[in-house]
Length: 102
View 1: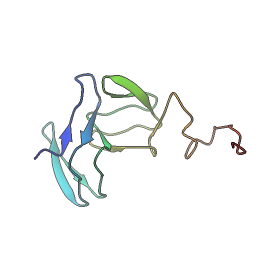
View 2 (view 1 turned 90 degrees about the horizontal axis):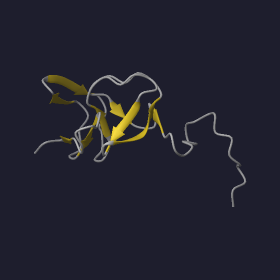
View 3 (view 1 turned 180 degrees about the vertical axis):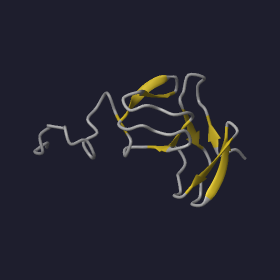
């Protein structure tokens, strides 16, 4: 079984469809990648290098932007991307929303 799928031709990410275990090696477009940490189903892997500020494309549309340079094969999640549509208040230090939301 394949561990990664690409949902749309325009996507710059591949989606994990079978958990990648810590220590696993995978071949992605002819390159071998070692994964030191496990990556769960539904998470994203960069299909190619993504520059800081570049859009993250999934389903053929932008789901956010890279907050740092992301290497091909690298895990993409809240530690290196942000939503361009809603505040990523768990990690975004610039969020100025009220703490008293009821």
